[in-house]
Image (cartoon, rainbow, N blue to C red; front, side, top):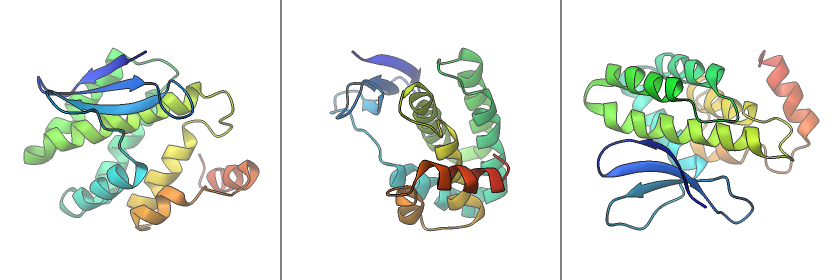
Length: 161
């Protein structure tokens, strides 16, 4: 069952749908094309590239504003916030809006997964590693794989989140 997260434009929207494991797979849908489930490497990498133009601290700071308001439900206030924040990125506004919406949806999905102990903090860790620590996106995307939740929890707590 698909559920709309937000329209990015008349041609593009983000939605939840059935994935391999649950109904919380995040898809980017383009009119007339097959929907795509973006991988962490894709949005971490692209936001990392954009940080070279707009500043890693700026993108991370804007991400935190979205992170702080993220719950289990889609919030129109957060969607509006994403639009407002994205408008500050000039010619990159559309792309920032798309990737912020995707990562917002990813955090909602994490909040709704019954077995996800770290919840949205796992996305924050990836964004922190990618933007602040400048870890390659490919490494940040797989950093948590094979690690115990309590080890990742300690890393998050040490970083004060």
